[in-house]
Length: 545
Image (cartoon, rainbow, N blue to C red; front, side):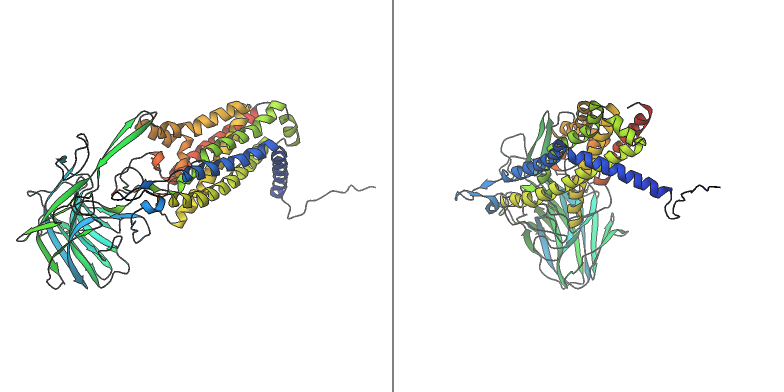
């Protein structure tokens, strides 16, 4: 009697191992296809070169020129004024009128604000200059007057402040980026606001009151490394008045100087040796048109009538952002990635052809005969093209920023610095967007079976919404919704500068701002890719090759 030998799988070799080994073989086969077609490889290299070239070319042509007081013409870094940086390393503006005296050790300052008024340039009546009569009464939304505890009079030094504002009620702000809301509403003689700041070591606590008797804590902040002696007092400042008009094909912004005037009484200090109040303009932030601001001679930064102080100032105490209110020729790291759009088109073209070519040439029958598991074929193609696009995009992004940003700085642009983790997120996120767009195109290639159609639809859905919004071809509201709902939302991952609540910014992609947060935008793109892959899988299984 003969005995038939039965092959028994090794105990450690389960079905999962078999599946993994089979998928590995499919993956290797798809990778071999990709690297064997010279045009596809060249397409990826071209995508990287376009991304790098456009970014570096734009940086090299961003030079600025200037001439001071009729002197010789200068260019590049020679035109950049002193740029203060805050405690967190961010570029800040720190300009205001300051009525101060020193405070050693713990203590507090209390003041009642009875008025906040201002004036700004009349932008409809010729050259905008406060001080030449061409002004109108009015406050900018973030005009400020209040009390402040500041590390020193050096621009960019640590601080905490309680203030009233033009349109945002009472606020407690600290170290340029911190902002806590207090009581809403405007201030007047009939509705004054009492403000108080107390110091206990490195902790500054802010309070507000409507009557000077019942106090409410607004917030408490830590100012690490605060010296024993600090400067305390009253301040006033106002950012420029800006009018932005949206139009077909773009927008235009006009701005002019503005100033704010705060009136204080019931000013009291505890824990301080009684001293003399001194008026100082930090960063040339005195009355608009005064010394250090717009060239003309201005009035004293404050006046005193008994126990009432009137302080007038201009400028701002806030982080610098992109857009018309920056006051500096700013640049962000993502601006060196402008060429990623052309790189994305090249990658989408290659990705769509990766599937569409097999249908056009009839090779899909051979592929599916060798691998009947159609889902494995789709997954392998997505992994191969996604990995190739990610690596290509990562290299291109690193080179673009490493070469483009120093060029922009040499040309006189002020780089808005961000934390290292933010830089990593922008670089890796750009590569991820390119990879996801490529996978999206692969899925479209499987759905449509035609490379040209897949390329067209991918470009229309991923790129056109951004262009429509950035070029103001559609109304701003429509553009914002396009950047929320379409795959173009994923480009928000490149935004490096946050939208600070205490700074007026314009939500415009050309200025680096998107309606969704970076990771929310990337999530929208991921949902589109997952949906496209799911539809491609269903259609692959239901249709003949």
